[in-house]
Image 1 (cartoon, rainbow, N blue to C red):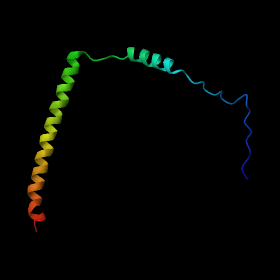
Image 2 (cartoon, rainbow, N blue to C red):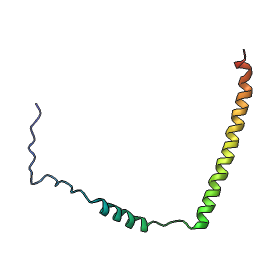
Image 3 (tube, rainbow, N blue to C red):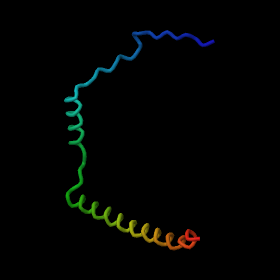
Image 4 (cartoon, helix red, strand yellow):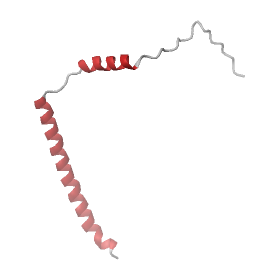
Length: 78
């Protein structure tokens, strides 16, 4: 038979008080000030590298799709 546990109200954790919305955004803003943001030059370099990566993989996937389409076309036309 399970034991009945009695919670001592003095030992129970106090309820969290809700913070105001304004205080929340002030804290977010203060944390954003601590972020080390990349320079404009770094951002452009990262963007270009991502776009090149996307184009390369789009070409690879397109060629793979074209190859599979041509390979499976005879099977689908039976």
